[in-house]
Length: 488
Length: 99
Ligand SMILES: [Zn+2]
Image (cartoon, rainbow over all chains, first blue to last red; front, side, top):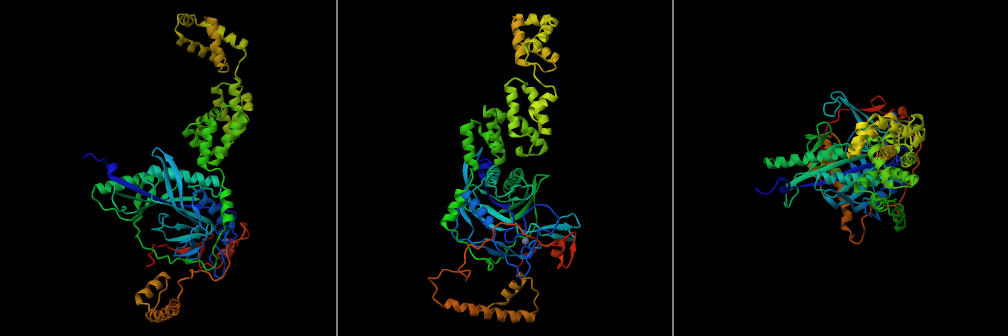
């Protein structure tokens, strides 16, 4: 048999992403949008769904959604309106969710993604605006809904503007899905419309994944995967699910349409064993609000307000800084990181590559340990620039600089201060170094003889001896030069 | 236009209404009457008319994104049949098809 398993089957993935907008107030009332705080303290008659209260849409939320649609190359509707989606759930106070149905704000867009698979366009089916639900805590049993005794509901989150972005089923692997979510997150972050923190739930990703024989006319049974709380989880969950579905088909099993829960610890998905219902949401136009008909001028103003998007930023970084694709990818993950880098380069004035090296090789290691973002750290861009200059000027060695940056990372002190306090100044005074060099030559006649015979490798040993005597403070390049000229 | 018993049961279930046999019979008659009345519109020639969801000629009604005052927790929970830890108490949640 010549067909490999990976050629025999094809995977189809469609993603549904929910993003909480970072407006000041909620979607249809003036309650503030925020995290934390005591339960049920950011609520009012509107977001509690009390009879007689009337929703009024938030202008900023409408504009943010138009902005997202524009950044995803969507058509922005000249007519859009809200609908009621009717269903019962305790964290939804009105027993309907105000959402959009057949007239969403954006349609027919795309996101261009790049990876080991090359570059491809993933279609965006729609971008629509709705309201978030409250949060339930399940009490009793294991804390999960199934064996709980009762639940407690906090409506602080209810009514937060929520944008739903639905991709076309254009994604064919876990890797593409990961690349898509990464790029989408970067775009949303650059628009400054949401915190896009998956761990905190301000960005949530659900996936529909199916497997079919290559070339089959129909898609396989659609499996919805939930509970992926990071971009890494999206990749892991879909990789697992892809393998599971292929193996099931290999074993002659029939896949069923179901919802599966991703377990972060085991890296596996398991069936939620819920019945798949054909929900009857009875959508109808929200009678309490009038429709929207943005004119061309409004739409153009939104399109004109878009910042530099990640793809353009990457192209610019490649052109003016001469960095590798991988370096650029990391430095442009968030606009805050990219801005930090550009500030440091400007303060430095030299080769951008050097700044990039310090960030990627040293700062990122420290940041990863502490789980911080570059822009959250204590080191300011100008301080990194100053550190690199100290190395350039020979005031400290590269090795000493690594010690200095670790201290700076903890204290936020200027590099000059750290150097001063730790007595790290590199000795570049020829006279001082010469004393050590002469001592080392006198103490190691055998080694000196070997070098005279042409065994250059021994020079390193002597350099090490001098560095030891100077307690690491001598400028290694000068030590090297002095030893050479004195021996030969 | 007439509504059958199955549709009455379905709509009652969707609205979480536990109707008696007597009420179901009455609802079947009333719903049929309402739909028959609305059905009269279909007798008109409306081919050239765009469907409208709202009767008032108002568009783009919005409010500025300014945060205002909320209820206190006590006020918010005042009408709750049961509350615990500042939250609304609800019975165990069971998945339901709405069918
Ligand atoms: Zn409110």
